[in-house]
Length: 297
Image (cartoon, rainbow, N blue to C red; front, side):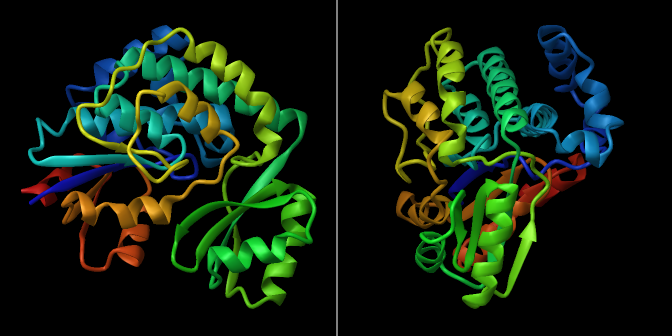
């Protein structure tokens, strides 16, 4: 069976998500991460409540760490032919694929999260999932709504919009009037994947200059291009901050790479649901706890 590993992004976090992994061999990386970042990230994975984890700075670091814990527990899952990550998860996918070291990935996640938190604090924003309309319809409706953009094309009839709080409220109303079945607020605090994140790019590019990425050992599909990363890893990661996430197209590319099973590594199970909506003929498995590893046998 040929497998693609997918890594979740911000919004998948949940309280206590790291607790089941505390006794696994990978937990030493969490302790190391706390030393590198200068704070108790272990407590973040075990004791933080949903309000604390909503903050961008905490959500990104904690989600990255849990996905790394799951990956370290796989013991060399065979036949992995592709990797992909949703937004933040692309950094995790690049670590899993060998393009970045764990320490480089941790440093970049910390820098990315801090810069995005600062941008969100300077100009608060939010995101909402729109169900029942395709991406083309959503984009067309939002042409007349200021400060609201289609940010994630996640699956058929599942699009996420992003912008200022006022912009997303107005966009949601317009989209409901256009026939959206539901418009659901997401647990994030910024207008991610929109032009409002432009100030983040300069800060993040400073951090990117401190690493030397390698080409991944297996293809890592980018949400910016819906194609495998090339040698411009840093440039693609920078563009990702303001570009929409083309996740539906990423998933549709997987069968062409021979994928017949998709395994999500990390909290939430959000990507597993999107795989089932987009690729009904492909097996989808979510690994959130050590007991879920038995699903891969």
